[in-house]
Image 1 (cartoon, rainbow, N blue to C red):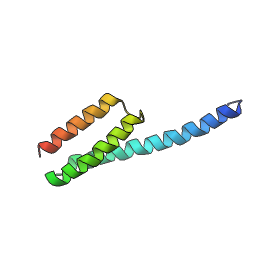
Image 2: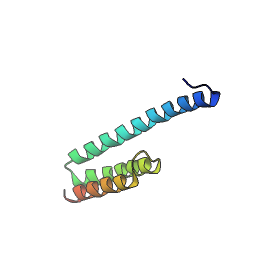
Image 3: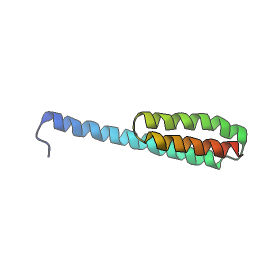
Length: 83
């Protein structure tokens, strides 16, 4: 167990950040899955903007790697334009 006040605080703050990061990552993954299931091109195009923004936010906060974000956005854009 931690011996210093700062170490105890770090444990608490890390846990809060871990839970928040997990929530944001899971929400984004669910949005990506929902986007892939959409058949209507206009609806998918509108949803793509929202999902792309979510992916960018994850990459900005280093929850996912920048290259993974780029690959996801590329694949989703190809999928939407193929509809």
